[in-house]
Length: 315
Image (tube, rainbow, N blue to C red; front, side, top):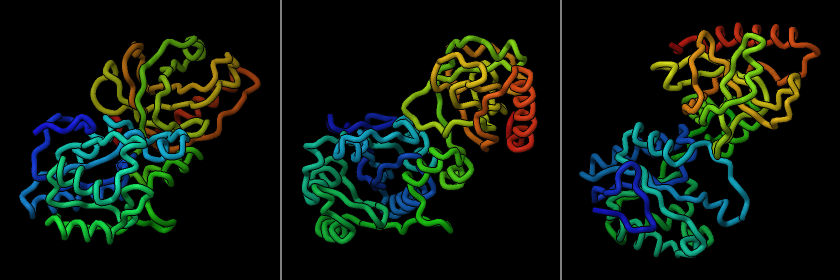
């Protein structure tokens, strides 16, 4: 059956009912989200239903506060990740001020039961829903019992520093701590962008770079990183790269913030192709060097460090 106009189903426009719904923002599809999805798959198996992830777009915080939220993943990437975790697809409910005014009862009865024929619902222990975030776990239990819908609240996944959550991951990435982000996500943080033509100054010093366009997904703090990249002309698999995020202070070309990837051992024409950059480790801060020879020596040292830190798993 198709979904109503306020809902988008990725990757398919049809929803197989009845459903079990894992509900959340799922930005990053981190280890905590993965626990929700695994429980939804188990519940769907028990109930003879189809498991889905249900999320909201734009991000509710952006709508309710008017403040932009820099995301860890695009909707399309979230769909890929939730499917890889075992559910059938990602259902995206348009979030606007009208939707935010739904009572908890209307949210449950109209969206979950009416539109999506939910036989089961899986949420995090801190889940809130409905106008003013008035609905909580107890509300879900009550409504589920009234409508014959099984409800399960999954305990927060934690490590030694506290709960695993998207906000914490964003903060780690903003500080350039891509290794902590990797631990919380269960995989490296990545973003993808079109390779654009730059001034080709890297070629003149022996380190050609691909200029990767910035998009809506968060990039780490300024600095130099070891990364794995993938891009069609490079061939299949992941390829080791040194990535500079910053303003090129030594070359001082006034282009503002750029993401430049030097792919080790490759010299393919990448212009016009999409490159995915997955961050492995932070190597150093961005620096201004007094000469091009100092810059060359630093990049050579970066390449050696990247081979040590990120060589495993690259093709």
